[in-house]
Amino acid sequence: MYSDELDEEQRIRQAITPKSWNEIKTSDSWAVFKIMAELVDGFEKMARIGPCVSIFGSARTKSTSKYYKLAEEIAYLLTKKGFGVISGGGPGIMEAANKGAHFGGGKSVGLKIDLPFEQSANLFIDPDKLMMFDYFFVRKVMFMKYSQGYIVLPGGFGTFDELFEAITLIQTHKTVKFPIVLVSTDYWQGLIDWIRDKMLQEQNINPGDLDIFTLVDTAEEAVATIEDYYNKYALKPNF
Image 1 (cartoon, one colour):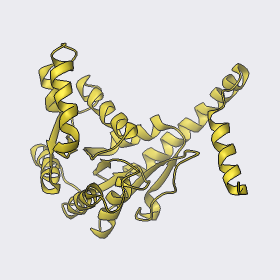
Image 2 (cartoon, helix red, strand yellow):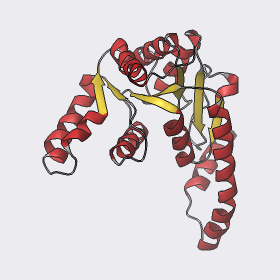
Image 3 (tube, helix red, strand yellow):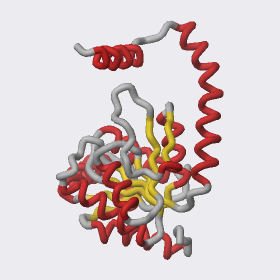
Image 4 (cartoon, one colour):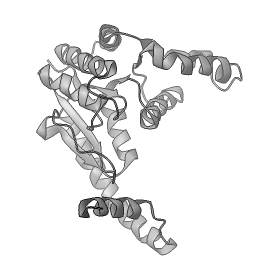
């Protein structure tokens, strides 16, 4: 193996190796200050950007994929409506979102998580709007607090994590309701059918919970859903 491959393997092993109880207690005490620093820095930077829409989806999506092109188009149209675009800062759908915002002349934000096996930030984020986080939950706070809408394209566990946290917070009235848009009937309909046929039938959710999100297929529909939210509450984007 090459030395850089060995270094990468060592970083991953260190990241997943269990710590002793004393190590846990010591790191927990110091982590409080790092968490505070990430929150304060994130609040100060994000507050200056203005209303934005977050776009989620798989980091593994290739640039030749129809979903990549769809995410790029959605972001481009959003910026033409005056909205900033936030992504997780990585490749795939995240890159497409930032790329669309960049070429649309809008604000392109990347909230990157520091992982031992993650790729570098994509090149379409505004240099002054790339933020790095060590803690997933701090990063989630930034998404939730500074997004006026979520647009969710096909993705994996990370995408589902962001989606269902937002649905849960809206369902439990822990955050103000904002539009959540799922893009691609082909990808999401099976999940929605299962939620309706299993979760709802077992009375684990209420019928109104299905109204928390909207399913669309086109970039125009996705952007229109976000724009309707702004028109309803007379909010203004970044013009």
